[in-house]
Image (cartoon, rainbow, N blue to C red):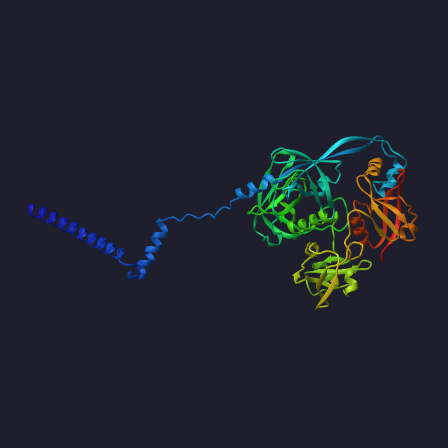
Length: 503
């Protein structure tokens, strides 16, 4: 028995020694292979090593570098101001009769059956503005100040000034103001043409005297039309920068800046079913803003160059209707009287695809590009005519179908009637915010309609008339019958129908 027990112990010891030897051998082999240069390892071991690394060393996603918005915000906020537009609101004392309501359905809200009594009460509109020069020029939206009797500007540091209106352009919804001060913080213009979809921007406003608000977003589209209803009528120059930066009431007229703190747009509108921000905001590009304010400072009105066409966007419906062979560009659907484009040789059915080598994909781009030119400038228009591309040189005209520069003050003559801006005393007497007055009349469409000297035109086809340039622009865009709404200096309101242009 002792012998068997000794033999069993010897067996166990031998087994332990063998296992230890195997373990040491495996460890030595693994350690030796690990210390070899990578190029000398076997393919099998290399694969196992990679798999082991992937399993035992978790990878952490590297977040993209966050843009620095601080510098741009610091540059922009001192130059963005709060604007208060004060006015006297007229409130009717008595109601209207059923007969009057019936006539209003046909003739519009301006119709009155006999005199009415009004009372006034103070009102105010609020918005933002951007200082663009150290000597106090401020750009904002026209809809912020268009009803104002007095405009008050509050700076970021709470200094307060009374501003005067240098000029307005309802067609682009821009206005230029001036306060008397020096050495102000201001924003320099950036190049909105170089702005890229996907680029970061900041929307900066000064609403409701909250000092300033800054929101961030990206450019989601350019040359976007929004079909915004605004006072003024005429050609709506809509070629907006669309962003997802939050813009709410009171931010209209504020700044859209790039990350360098440069002004690339003026915040103007939002796309919303509720009146509050709902995902998209729209800004007027700086390329348009610079041109408009330059004209307002120099001439008092905008030198708007036009082709004199009735344009349509080329889209799928138009392609199907007209059997077109291309899906972009601007379709020429007709011409105004004495049209620059028609005189140069464009024809109805042509598709404008480029101007001076700049591609034109839609009407918004056409409007935006034409803001770079003045009446009298020659441009090379590339058209598609039934599949053939043709270059035509066009001398651009103004809204009066002339090539000369128009000055803001003075008069214009249209179809035998001479129009002048309405003086402030007459505005106050009649309770008008805008309008243009006929100072002289001779043989022509106005006289044939029965309109007398002194008549004040306040609306055409229910589109309010604020400036001479706007009057000419609207009339130039009309074909067929138009409804003229206005008032005589004695307070008598009148409506006239005039056959206008070619049917």
